[in-house]
Image 1 (cartoon, rainbow, N blue to C red):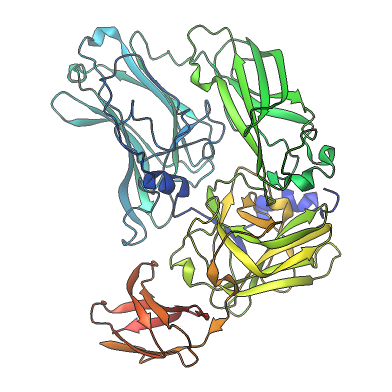
Image 2: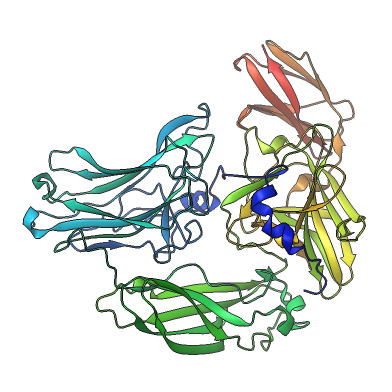
Length: 616
């Protein structure tokens, strides 16, 4: 990465002190992983048989919804990115987003507290048990993680279902504003009302809408007989966080660039993280296999034996295999290396589901620092009359053609779709002794949220840019006065901040907030059809009267061809009225309640700047 500029270490150390004046992080208002899974056609829930003891769950399934064999609802998000140092890989995240990945009740006022996510077990048959069997339920919880702290009035609670149909609260935790490790809770199941064939458990979080996503993470649930208050010991060796990429800086890059000098891009080792959750040191055998996903061809293997100390999280490392030796039939296509890590120990009866973990190294037509998932949203606090700039540094290692960008914008209130921006490509910027050298700019753009490539929106350049090797910067340029708080999704599990800069006044500054923006330059062959508005000129139009009562007149003086369309949205981005528009169009507003709205014009000839409408 010799092309890249380095941010002084002192600035990174000071991030927790100085960050926040101009850069901000916000909770996400949507979960695209959940949304896409909810839209899939294979969501039929099969009713399983009644469960019996022991009950165990550590959320190692790859599906973002809870396993239907053990859980009756699907409001929580199963993932391995939101929890900090989970007990084992996979957590259940409670937030203020519903089962479709959208905000609960997005039409209510901020600061309103609601009952949000629930996690309800299938029926567990306890009819053959009695209080003397000493049945205990244990689990681990953590507020915030890589999300945001619940507010003081928010909480996570546990209810148990009795034979009379009453859900009884047996535990509750209010917000804690200090980052903490996962904490274990022990709950004795002693009431005779629980010992029936329809026993169930339910966790629920109270969340403050519009302020925070009220994140709680749940992990490693155990329900069994013959336990006690002191039975907090776990005997398990498990993988925790996702393995590190095999690349030492990027998370993804084009294979043809990688092949220019593979050794310069590869990390020194393959690294995965194990945790000995138990109280005794363990002899652990671990290893990996690396294959080409498309063909199964083996790339490398390795194994090792070591001792894992009790209650210790350990990175296991293997010497990097010769990952640059593979020669694909098409070096310009998508290539995926799959790395499967495994481990075993001598703990008797330990769960085996968490003894494997997979990392897939992607080579494709883009450079990326992010892992494809977002936990937060990043935005700049703009001055009233000045534009804002966010720039991410990349480099080419051979001549190539820059075709556009892929970016994931985070939804906002008011709707981000009303906030104009431009894309700039710089060869250099005025930081660390450099000077601004703008190579290309695409203007009059608006955020789109349709998933057109790998959950990103694609903005194709009207004039592809042929570039020589060297550093370059992709910049999101926010227009003064019309694009405040434009939010870009942020991967909080990756670094990336050492390649990000911003400018809200006159000078570029290095970013002081950690995480990688979901922003990727797209290179090489022509792109699939992306956002059609990306290269359309701004369309002149006006409307009157404003404020308006029963009707609004829209005039598009230079409109030609097949006409245009109009849409009227509320401040939350919901489209309330839409239809065709000509050079002169009257719109009936009688169905709208008094308030503030936004009018938007589109056509094949241009893209009209949204305008604010006051309805009387």
